[in-house]
Image 1 (cartoon, helix red, strand yellow):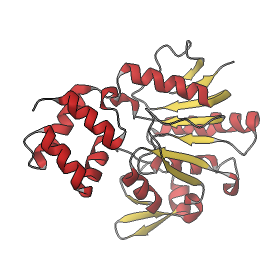
Image 2 (image 1 turned 60 degrees about the vertical axis):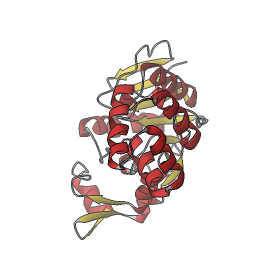
Image 3 (image 1 turned 180 degrees about the vertical axis):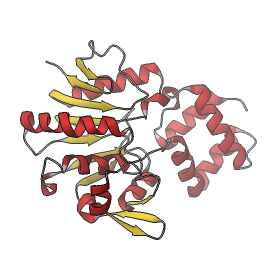
Image 4 (image 1 turned 45 degrees about the horizontal axis):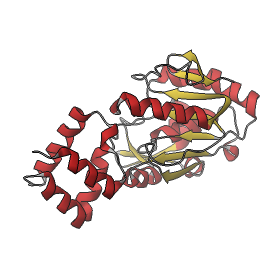
Length: 258
């Protein structure tokens, strides 16, 4: 298939997703498999289908926004968050923390955050601002139904307290759901929230080009209060973090400096 550059322009017009910010080889391979699956012989044919078939369009956006998520992913990092960073943030900023879960996928991460915070803060005071580019995964997150594998790392006390078994799945409780506000947001083009005490964005930016990553990390720094914390994924690092105004606290935790 040819004319990928023109295809990228068409996709941007349709979805506001800028494919130039993603690693091309990886993304092209994913898209080509989807084009073939829909029995299209060219990018032009596929674009026509995207414009006329809502199901194909939704599938495409869902496919582009790679959604692999689970609760308490890398539990030892969540232990650090719960035992060191949450108490520290409460001490600095009080218990009405302004927390953003960026690229939140199916909700596993913001719901994990609520449970982690509940060890130190009354649930009624917790509010997580959770965003993702994909409205389908946001819809899934709002339903709050998860597989046994998804919740495998959730501490037992929270599994008992906040989940109800429904068939082979697990439904998260309404008291946790009420603490999260979900919205659509494009990390590449939309305005970022201000005055965040903590931003959590994990295992997402690995799919972006180095330039796009740097731009996003700089915007995160601008969104954080001085002393605020950025929590990233176990496969990620912030290159040139000092120049962006961060201090590295641990491999996956960065603090915004003066």
